[in-house]
Length: 258
Ligand code: S3P
Image (tube, rainbow, N blue to C red; front, side, top):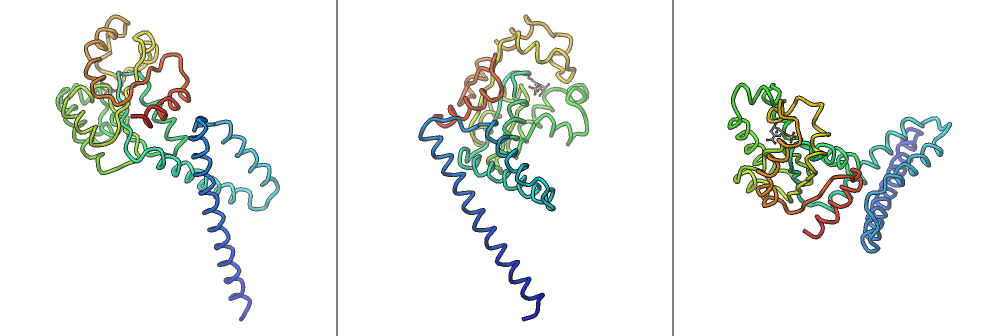
């Protein structure tokens, strides 16, 4: 055997060891999840992830392959997150609620901690139409926009383990709610009108609120929508005075029961 063949054999052995280590690592991830579940420990522990990152960074200090190995760990951690998400949610999570209830914030956070795929309905519709939401309303009217929402909800039924963050009006149509239920579990985020006002006051992206940014208008509109939102929801979460981490933990716990 010449040297080249020998090196290739060594490389294959090395790959085998990596595969074995990854299998072991993934099964440890599953054991950690099972332990947390058994003892009621929160699934999300961002401090632990930071600690782990620091440990790896320290270990790799002065290593000639620091950047390359860090890159590999990035993928490993992302995949561990996916394994957790797939174990927790075998379905899509549909976030509904009034404008400013926290749907986008929560979906971005879940994307971060579980490496889940997120579909921001408004954003995707605006991209596909090549127009902002206010322009779609002004040019084609609300009905046209609502039809786009319905079609997108039907399209999303082909996926799972995805967060679908709906526009605030999506759950008002009965047909949309039916399509949501075929997608997965529906989570309603709510907040007090004062909190909503605070969150939306600096944005012009919501045509229905432009010129109406006051507590009275918001409270009225929320009340008109409340029953439809609540009927659509499998789980309801109040977001006032809670961190996004607390909201997500509550959501994970309630989804398990739902
Ligand atoms: C709407 C909410 C908006 C957007 C559109 C209509 C609504 O989405 O879809 O302006 O009817 O509540 P956000 O809830 O993401 O702001």
